[in-house]
Image (cartoon, rainbow, N blue to C red; front, side):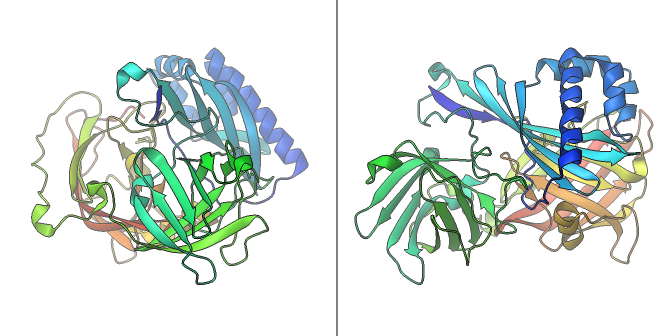
Length: 457
């Protein structure tokens, strides 16, 4: 048997505030009512439980069909693993089951007129496939774990230690295999994963700002009591330097600080000592970057489209992603969101833009403003022109759910505006954009996108 990730979507809430008793109970009750309505396909009940900006979706001509599909795919026995409150907003961390697999998710709620309403729901699904689907090259994970995002950026061997020593060798190998060897002869080997139900507090999962999660399910170790246990880890990579913190296997504690970790957690500073295993993680030379082919316009009824993306030297075609569970929304075209995702990606993966789709010319996605929106509750005034172009939001989401906003800023040029007509074309380009998350840079060299027709949402 082997495991492979089929990702719906993943939104990881790292910083969080504490939860209060009454509001936390009300949030739980709202979600439980929403869960029943989703599973039963109760459209009328959902209208009472959704945030007001989501209610119009249930009036669309195909809302019943989309709800039926979403209900059939809804994880069974979804349980609330944690509640995070931040004023009039709340986030629930969830676990559930799928056929032959498991799921983790989150639900964002907002308080409207004194009542909690569901604003957004995201799930990540891990399905175990039969061995006949391919070689058994990846070990099967426990049902409560998912694969970490952007593991490929760590591939290779790293050496270092704490307090300036060089006594640890950590290797991130293919098939998510992680090994650690100490100069004393101590060692461990295991599988890279993320266990969202371990190390969480009432305030959720807390790690150093901007860091990612990477746990290790230990399969072999010099210390027998560590076998079968989980070491909870966090990391931040800056070029060829990697900061990595890991707990003693079996100790369900994560650190919020690299400089002052709690007892039972070791934080290492490592430098790359071996080649990257996967050639795809090596930036290409300029000569190897081939621009994508020109778009072919097709005018059809309904919304269709795609984005030709050149990311880290690899050209891909992302189809337009629409429907009940997508982020594509044109009900207010002056604050429209359009989502393009790979065919094999999760619900949130790929490219996501929010902008004034009615305005041609230069739009600007400011990285600082988007980071402030993601982590501090800030606002981006979509469409407001502050000299660099109309304010917009640009995010590229990795297959594991890690969100990459612009490192500094990215320019979106709208060639043809959205008109809402069935024969209309909404079209634009992006070029020379550096994306950044948790110490990782991605080069979005060029994008050319188009949407044909009118969106139903």
